[in-house]
Length: 503
Image (cartoon, rainbow, N blue to C red):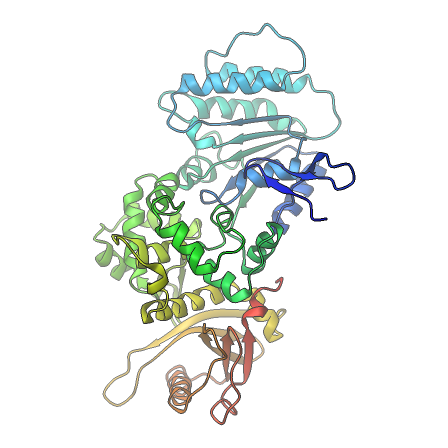
């Protein structure tokens, strides 16, 4: 008999399952999907006798709180979370409630009048815990506590530098507000400078982790459908939690992105404003990059976004790249100053292409149009680039040092131009020239298309003067039909299934 499973919420640590033996509801600990490196780091920290200040960052709804609560289960000695848009008095009241919940003995202490007193009370409570194990303090939504004239940071600085640093303690601070975390914690030049001993930046799930997550929720979709959903949602667990059994990918996208009450209808603006101070600058950069899939130079991006050059613009780019929304790279044969910036966040790309300033969208109809087919093809290329470890493993070069880049040749009157979106430059004297095709059937290489690939290869070799072997490499969803045009052209082939494998 299949047990009945009720998911309480993303913040809870347990499923509730009906035991088939006695028909009673029993708690079953939730599992952490993926996050292998993060769990290994937490294990190593807990085994150490040193104190650690661990800063966890990551976009909103990526699973930061879930990771800590689920990994430690009931082992947290103190947990406290900031309240959004609340004043310092409300934050202190909330702290007092949390501390009273954890205190085992009755106490007549008064509510703290300020943050210095609050952290002093926390040290008294932690000192009262008799254990040889590492004590663990988790402060969630840390940036929300730093309210105007609250002196929160200076009090926390006192707590860490005066007391916690000499104890066997792990203090975890967590927050979605990336701008604040970078400026006030990671790159802080005051009392917290170089005090963060460990960092975790939580990334979205890979394709394989997404599949595992859905399976854990009893949702069975084939990998083509999962990849289609990934193109709209990315690997964000909270977005994936909206997927229900019995719906196709297109039905789910319609409900979540286009129905009036869909979770992601108003998510775009909320996402960036939760992460960044003066988020409008970040949004303008993202909008500009969404229109140029291969990327823009800094100069071109300034023009397209209509922002001013200077330190503020540099900080916007740094924060977007640090958060995983964009990436910078140098095209093949170019130097660092010629680098391009490219938008890599799937949801932002989907929103700005299909949702932004559009009303009454019939997604089922739009999804069958050429616009979607072209867009999904470009997005599949971006997804392949995010799964380079899996791609290298499939090519049998997991241990070979590689660099990846693109190649753009504008051509001239005497020579054709060419654009190659992914080149894998290998230390074993080979370059993979990648052609990525997302289709619902095996891909057919026509005579005309085979000629285009050969021309790309010839232009690339001629302009770069490379002495390495160049292998046309196809990455497809359902394979390549063997015909007279594929034979002799395609030298290596990777399937969508390969991208779902562990790295």
